[in-house]
Length: 223
Image (cartoon, rainbow, N blue to C red):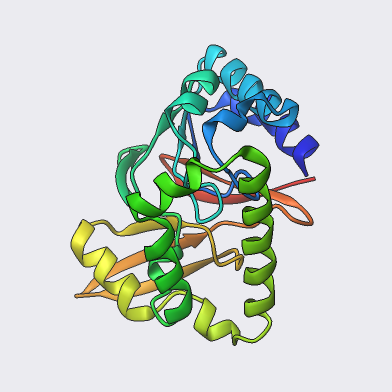
């Protein structure tokens, strides 16, 4: 799917004013000193070319590439977004999240997330040689896949109470997130307000993106 992503950056994305990537652009990210990897350098170059074409690119780190930092951002010419963030999309305040913070019922994952986002853990991890960091990342990835097989789809999906609270805290009536790999549009009634929640696809078997303009948002598939 990397080739499909590159084609998107070279075509449809160049007709957009902004591109928001809501995490997990990479299967794992072990530190910005891995930018010398040819694949990573190529992705950075493609993003930089898109930026030079006039489309501003924003990136929100996900649960796999949360250690992506300013060195990559500088090389790619992108802006790193905090999770969550409220942005104006064609005049509509929109809440953007990666989505994993909404999955409150997956207690094991939330505990793991808290551990790896701790500054002390990240500092210790980054002190390891690249090869050791890559080994650890692959091991964690394998453990994650194994644990997912033992969990119900409901546990790994967003918690309704988290979605409702996110709408209330932000004041928005539109939310866009990824992470759960269940692309769809959902409607929620929050304190009398009709709200919409868009879930992005995962780009494993096919690509997709959400196009938003003054008329609203439309899910587009990408071959």
